[in-house]
Length: 242
Image 1 (cartoon, rainbow, N blue to C red):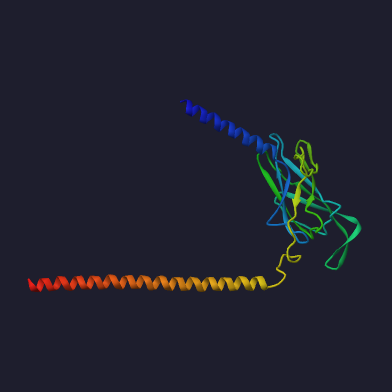
Image 2: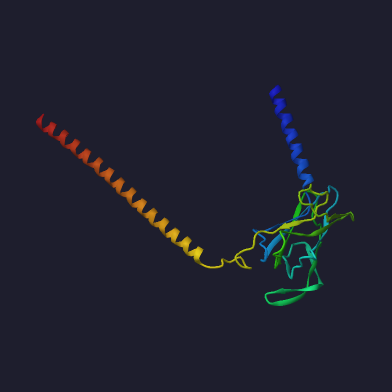
């Protein structure tokens, strides 16, 4: 009985810790689909959980960093949400694929047409973005989350390096090492040829191994058949002598 009570108490305590941890970490965040490589293009998802029990999330505003402007931002349609893309003039034009760009997306706003994100649910808002900067390891997007009761939660606090996570952290997109080129394609085909040769060699080794295994099996079968034949001949001779 004591053991059961201890196990039950432990389970309740663990569940409470997990519940509190989930609540503490439930904030607007951004993650790439795959990787977000420096100098390339990526699809990213802004994940928005509903942290209220008595209100729905009806609006999300994501502000784009001005120190690393993005010339290309394309939202994916989300059922039940209206999308507005705001563009602003750049103080310093960008050069993308040899073409100068004098404006970039400064904000994307999603507004619910219906119930929005109800209590206990979350929603993802996908964007195709690029060309990602090459001179930073991360991009910070400040976001505002509006509830149906008019409450606005400002996810705008930038995390300090080596410090604790702020109470209302801004979504941070981590950038990975640059790909071989801007589109992530290999710089040359040597690695591909090497991989092909390795695959061919592996296939040859496998074929050789299969042939050896087949030969061994046939040899064993032959031995068994021979032994059976000798045994049969001995028995037949004894019967004739009898």
